[in-house]
Image 1 (cartoon, helix red, strand yellow):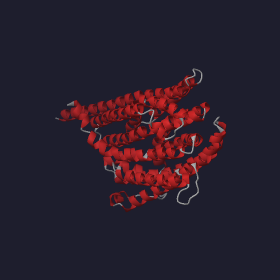
Image 2 (cartoon, rainbow, N blue to C red):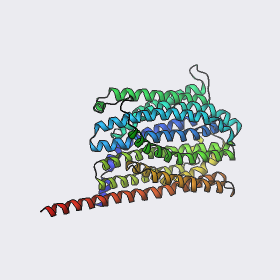
Image 3 (cartoon, rainbow, N blue to C red):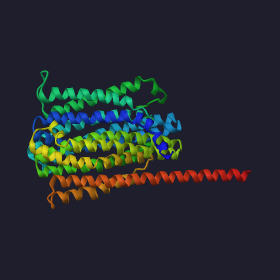
Image 4 (cartoon, rainbow, N blue to C red):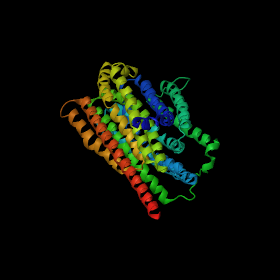
Length: 463
């Protein structure tokens, strides 16, 4: 009977999560396609893509985190039936995201010359910088897209963003073929061609989702406002208090992998290329698991708005179970096909051999990776941000990365040592986050129970 209390939530969660998972998978597969196409140009170009993407993905995830402030607030307001409040959340989120996209681009523009001072191969940096600037400019239309995506996902409507994302990603892959290799009469632009394809496809995503939301009758009840009228400093502050810590949660995790890429560069071009292959494959499972995390955030937020704490706990733990099963499948896939998957990207024997070893470690940390990302999503639904942010900081930057450096260089374990450090950080994060969700939800349940008893005592006293 107790198990049925959890399994009854699976159907609703799957319907909510699978479009987000497919949308995220579409985004990742574009990255996979980019790397496969770029990998055909050689190890140096693939290493340049690794270096640039390690920086860009860090910035991208911070921006994504900022935009995600919209979803839990909309989910709670939707649970409470407050449509006017949802409209105000959208308005404030719109301007926060647009300004954030511009500031993040300017930040990377100023930061990019610093890649020359990270101890990376000169030929790799020369290829990486222009590509990095092109794809970073795509953050502006992407943050515009994220505003609408997070808004409609907060209303438990996830298929629309999925459809738009997958369609525009297909365009991205086609443009890669045209611009990287110089097909259909276009000049061969190499790595920069992949960057321009990304920028064009993200502009398309922004335009299409705007037209969809404006034309769809289901959103007219929310009176979406795009101007500065009635912008509230209090609302901006509240959203930033959710979005900025969420962004830093992503930064601390993704930053650990980006720093690992820089350490891989110290070991040479082949090590950096192998790292890019392994992390690109691992990102497929991670981003799909983040679809379950988005479902956890929305469903936990809804139950919190309805004050149904028992259902809130059941929802949370049912999704932890789902992600564990899901990630086990990828663990088996990575370990079983470790000698074959790298061949999709490159045929260099040294790179393939190193990537195969890293894929074994990637298989081992799949469970931890899935649990920790769902833990962050569930806690975000509870608006619990400060402690999870601290957890990610300590786990990755105090434990994982220093351990990886020590194992890689003083102990001579090189690539394997760096990835063992990442495995340790992910596992520590997963354990701490699932425990925190249990404690907070248990405390809320107890408080609700005590409140009900107090009301019952008051009724008895009146009698």
